[in-house]
Amino acid sequence: MAQATPFPKKHILILGGSYGGVATAHYVSKHIIPALPNPSSYQVILVSASTQAMCRPACPRALISDDMFPQDKLFVSITQQLKQYGSEMCRFVHGTATMVNHEKRSVSVKLSTGEEEEFGFHTLVIATGASTPSPLLGLNTDSTALREAWATFRKALPTAKSIVIAGGGPAGVEVAGELGEYLNGCAGWFESKLNSPKVDIMLITSGKEILPHLRPTIAQTAEGYLAKVGVTIIKNARVERLEPENTGLAIASLVTKATLSLSNGTTLSADLYIPATGAKPNTSFIPPSLLELDGRIKTNKQTLRVDAASHPRIYAIGDASSYARPAIHNIIAAIPILGANIKRDLLLDAGKPESEVGPESIFEEDLRETQLVPIGKSKGVGSAMGWRIPSWIVWMIKGRDYWLWTTAKLWSGRQ
Image 1 (cartoon, rainbow, N blue to C red):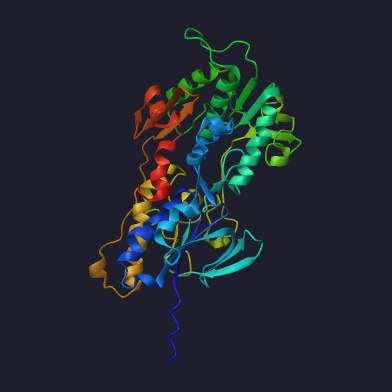
Image 2 (cartoon, rainbow, N blue to C red):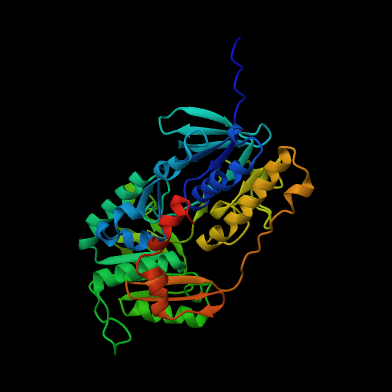
């Protein structure tokens, strides 16, 4: 008798290999597939442009030297983290999504080999994150490119006499603080600022204060800490013209000297220019009908479903999604909600009655003031759930290693 042809797998396709994507892959493999009526008929496929995940918040300090963090903790192999489930349940694909066809329920992927492959999906989770304007500050492509950017920057750092950083948010403030302390040291206890710093470091913000998500008094404390490591802040100004115009935006132009014309009429010269003006969602492969005006995916803020899609079981999470303000703590808080709704939807699809699967889970973003910003290796400012946090607690929670103490559980699925 001829053997029966095996039924094709129902693919749970996850796009993105950072916090949202890796955490979702663990949740689905660990908690959802085993609870479905026929677990062997499902398979998770995680697609990522990088074979390694990394602690992106650590970039402002990590870009200075490999000695700042243990590299085996800063970068981890995604395949090593997922192999506990076996390739039949959870498969990794090294590639970049180039098109989502939500009507056909398929995703086109450019593999690392250069070939194109189309993946059909039963369930889709988009967690492709966002890219930073500077190649120094994130996995815009893969870990190889990020390390190359750091190596290029480090060679130029010892001879730099002027550094300009654009962006008064956490990334810009943290980069300024790390570089200021590393290159200039710190003023004494009784000095309000560092006089005659070795390197002129300027931080440009378009706002009245730096750190706009924190109250002004906290921002002013941060400004004082920056002054003590030789950082000058230029407020209410934007970079209107940059010459050469691509400076700082690609590895090839990372250490090109630049002339910056600001909106307040000031002209600055910089040996090194670092744009830290926010991140752009990685959603160019998503149909425009599914996108908000800011480029993020239109996402139901309570269920994390993409309701505008032509078919059910399409979800989005992380910086590519509009469900909440881009922040790692929002991703961590949303993963159990996303997982519970995926499980509910898959059980209903498998024929379970609604009375057995229970109500859907609802995500509620905590809108209280929450942000921690280290400034150098010993100082920091911040607030958690509306409560102002002392500098030493900011150091203890984030500043000593930029969350590296938390990532092992997240990458391994033990969180």
